[in-house]
Amino acid sequence: MKKLKLIFLVIFMSTITFRIIGVANDNKPKIQIVLISLDALRADHLDCYGYSRITSPHISELAKDSILYKRAYPAGCWTMPSHMSILTGTHPSRHGLNSDWGFYTSKKKEYPVLNNSIKTIAELLNQKKVFSIKIANLPDEIGFARGFSSSYSLDPFQTEENFNILLKQLEDNANNNFLFFIHTWMIHAPYSNTHFLKNKDLNQSKELFINNYRNANGKNGNVDDFVAFLKENQMYNAGDCLDLYDGGIFYVDHYIGRIIEKCKKLNIYNNTLIILVSDHGEHFDDHFPNNFFGIHGWEFYEEFVKSVFIIKYPEKAKMKYPKKSISGTIDWPVSLVDVLPTIMEYYKIPVPSYVQGLSLLKMNEKRSNQFIFSEATCKPGEEKKMILNNHMKYIVTMTNPTGPMRSNWKSIVDRKLFNLLADPFEKNNLATDPQYKPVLDEYERKLILHIYQSAKTDITKKTKLDKQTIDLLKTLGYI
Image (spheres, rainbow, N blue to C red):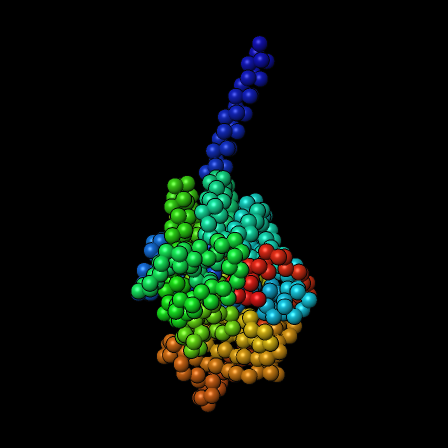
């Protein structure tokens, strides 16, 4: 009998111990990250960045809980290289996705694949048993799905059906460690939202055509059809296209609000690290007359590369870091390659030595003198590189770029140097002014050295693109 009582006591105590351990594990801070990329969104078209039109009320509310970087720059000025730099913390010459689409169309229908020696944020978080979900119509075959536990090749904001997949995944993983990588094309051309389109005699069928263009199931197979419609209806001009573009921002902002609302209902908002970025900007007659539709990827003027970068830290960050590091606004230039190391430092995960970005958790005066590099453009047969320090920006143009560095320093056809403080609209090129020659020479040396050191690993692997990717690229006007 005594032996039986002893057995019951052992079982009872084991159960209590198990419950205590379980509670302790439940209370352990989780790694919960939502990384959202809004393709082709120029920062100066958000009201929280000073835009006069209210395009983004929900993003503005998020910004109040966050730190907002007023001068954020991508590592490349178009989608593929910029996004891979965000996900890896490396520059295009290192991760390998730095070729233009002309490379694809002329080189046996192949495109470079992510360098095997570079890991995505999803792969790095696997060591912490983080369930990672990619909901992004970015090509899996060139490396965008690498390391993700689950990959949905769709635009989560395109339809309610798609968005419900995102909400369901949030619900299912609310008690888990998770990383959501969410990307949308709905701001990118073709601009298909009439919310801000004023003073146009649009009948219901024309309005529906615009607002439902992306869901036409292939009937309107590429951007040329949409441009033809705009021309036919006297809407193919900078003013109307800008209104349509802003309408896309307003449309996407609605879904951002719903993600935030869902996180609050699931009681995970306060403890979730939310990062909102854009991969590049968009041009509306700013520097090139009569160019106002889907113009990006081939220049480094501010409208092409001024990106959105907002970070909302978990509540506990307020106790760990200086306020200026986790809330308010930062005016110093930062790079989108800083996303990955910032995440890694926050969760105390070692940052691989190949990562080129720097954590933003300890902002200080030294960061104001940080050199920012951007190096991948998409015009076939041409390449531009950018280096920026404080308010001085240097852009170099070369022809026939080759190799992993995508450069040809013997074939430079243009140099531009701007003082963004004195000349924010980049109208006065200082490159030919003799007094600025020392600055120009210094910046060019630093740019050459950066790219040389960045591209030390040979990148040769390429792959075919699948039909879904090719159809997407045609719809967006890339090929």
